[in-house]
Length: 515
Ligand code: DHE
Image 1 (cartoon, helix red, strand yellow):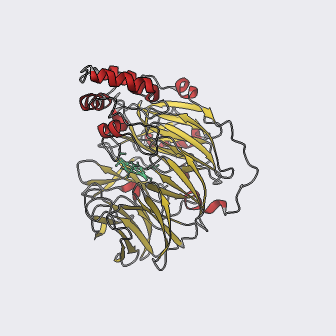
Image 2: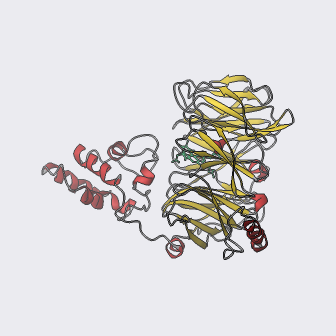
Image 3: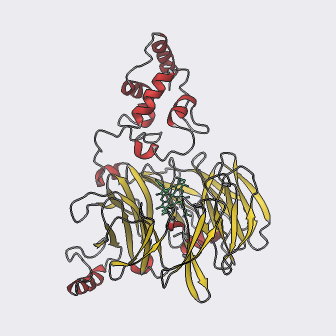
């Protein structure tokens, strides 16, 4: 905001224009940064789809007092409380119409950092596969940590409000990061430099990379599409409208990579279908197989949809989201919202094969699996109940529930650790982290390093020797623990650190981490 607009607003205020038209206030005070269409510019989009997920202070509070460590100024001197309230309500009303956001619009947003030069080898001495990224949501940055010394090698700005896990190229050199505003950022870890950005959606959920590292899929709520990008140059390969068999357009809750299947799996929010999109150019043969199966009445395949990005619909009884996949990607468990049950879908035959009771909103996407008594088990937290469910992945029975100090968000382990770690994200005990024995399923230690602060999300180093925990506060930290003794080793100050992602654990699909 310029000095002139502050003055003009103050005069307007003095003239008793407290209840000025919020659209007019928006045009004069906000449009320069947030876009005349409210879809963002140097500031984020101001639409309910994004603001509804805003963490921390309420919208009116941010307008009045600004946002620390960002370009957002305080407007409490320029606007009256009534004007601020009207403006907050205005930006929370849906747009009259969603603008077209197809291949051309996306391509026009492609931007490459003019200062970027690709290094021939890593510009640092650290093990490039033991790098851990820390997403700092407090001021929209990512810290690049040396996983052996815990030194911060770089700290770079991300698009506004990153959500979901960044995705690494199969060799671990590049990483792709997505914001809820639909921006995808490419960063070169070897060069410690941003490569470029593209806006693949207007309101997006997450991204997934194909097993060969060539394609990036972006799951969108707004518009209801899947955007497919080339990882090489962020070019648009395809924008796939997502419409159910009965013609119902659907938001995409999330997209996942299924490496053994060479495909993306899509969770659809508004239609009872799961989609599988081939990332194998030879998918024709695979899909002919499905046609053959269809003759036996088992699944539906689209013979016209073959080759790269061939699409297959799997019809289910009601929309499922938040998927957990078995290690071979033959089965997934999805949560059926409002019914307190989990549904197991066999992706090979394309139908529901089991269901199990999962009350309290399971957060299956955070699930992890391991061997116990010669059986493969998985565990999931519940967002609304202080418990973890441990499930046998052959019989699909809940074999145990573990009572915790409150509902948690994330679970994490490592194949070389006897423990898994579970946060308590909600309620009076949000400052604790349980460490649980993978065999006895007993809580062996409850950590509370910063009383009163939210403690959440764990990532292990490459060898599993250390566990990194976020103190999820503006003046927060990443606390590094010895994963065997469970003693604190060091504490790194960070701005509201959320997820942490180790290159090696991610590219090797470590069994204790999210994929
Ligand atoms: Fe997430 C991952 C969905 C709210 C932080 N979250 C994911 C993924 C999905 C998902 C589908 C897996 C995508 C991936 O990594 O590729 N999250 C949802 C929701 O549906 C939910 C409940 C509501 C929403 O509207 O989004 C939700 N998520 C949150 C939060 O409130 C969190 C705690 C803070 C925030 O950033 O909004 C949050 N979600 C995260 C993080 C991951 C994530 C840090 C990556 C975890 C990982 O280890 O991979």
